[in-house]
Each structure stands twice: as C-alpha cells, then as structure tokens.
Image (tube, rainbow, N blue to C red; front, side):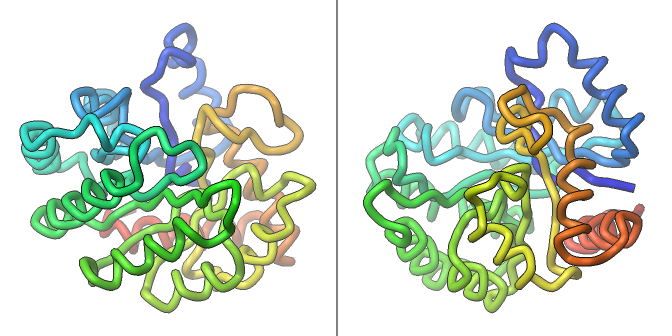
Length: 263
C-alpha cells in the first residue's frame, strides 16, 4: 500500500539489522523503496545502487549532496553519469542547496548543483531536491534554488522532505514539481509543513521517511526506518480527511506515474 520515496539505508546505522529493517517494512505494507545514493560523498554515491540491485522492490538514485559539493571532481561527476545508466537508477539526487550547515561554500554548492542538472538532463532523469535555508533567513536558499532552476532546468522534479513556506510550495507546484512529506510533518512545531501538505493536490504528493532521520511521532527521537512511512501516511490521511487506503493508493500511483515505473 505504501511507498517510501526517499530513504538512506546504506549507512552504518543499519549495518547490524538491515535485513530485519527490510522485513519490518514489508510487514508494514511498504511495496517499494527509493534508495538515495549520496553515500559519504561522490566516490561512494553508488551505495544505493549496490543495495537496490539485490532486491527487485527497490530503486536507486545517484547524486552529490550539497554537504559534499566541495569534494566533487570532474572525474567524480563522470562516474556518476556512468552509474546513472543503470536501469535501477530512476532519479538524480538528492541535490540542491543547504545554507543551514554550509558544509560546502555556497558558490561551490551552486556550481555543483548546476553541473548535476546538466548531467540529469543528459541522462533523462528527474531530480530530487534538498533545500534548507540558513538560520538567519527563511528564503535565501530557496531564492537561489528557484533562480538556478529557472535558468537551468525545464524537467521534472521532487521537493524532498518539504519544509518551506506556502509560497515555496506554490512556486514548486507551479513549475511542475511534486512535494514529498516526511516524518517531520507530525512534529508539533511544523505547522508550515502541514499547511503545505494541505495545499498540495493529492495527485502531486509523495510520502517518505528520509531514514534514518526524522522519525515521525510516535517514534520521534529513534532511528527512522521505512516501516514508519505508514505512520506518516496515517497522519497525512487524517490531516487531509481521506482514508488511509486512499492516501496510500494516491501517493503510490503518483510515484509510479512520476518515475515512469510499472506497478
């Protein structure tokens, strides 16, 4: 019934019990996983691909996260382009801008983002966006993101773990993107995310865990895992006034349609 459209299962936090995590996901009704291929940086961005190849119900992405943008070389980007040819790869991401931590200089983040837009375009892949503004502004990263997209992108995309304002949600929808909602939708102080989730048409909505981060209530503070996408789905269904079955069917259909996958 459910699809976790964004999870990181390659890291050490899952090394001890990865098989059990996957079993719990299946038992919770999770039909598909999209594994995000960022790894610890450009040289390990095939991490999701390697895991997805072991399971027929998984897909993968490749990409350089803005945190590691300063590590990306021309050779790294060429390697990503080669990995992107694998049929298991269905998107390029997560990529974007992160001005909250500034692990990489902002001009480098922007440069590597644009380079990856070109690579995604050449590969015929949609993009999965990470955008987090600085602690001093609600809009700085978003303003730069939309400018770079306007100048360099006309394809499909997903705003992963959407946390922006209503204006950011409207702009994202206006340029044809889907919004994906994670466990922070359930957090007490996340009214802006709930407002965006109510604004977003159901046929433009995805759900995700962003495992191992952002476990939803009632698991908040614990390691997140794909089974918990069901809890986010329950919350979102209640918020929107639809049944859990309707929410699961709609978000699943959106995933298959957007990524051009046969159910």
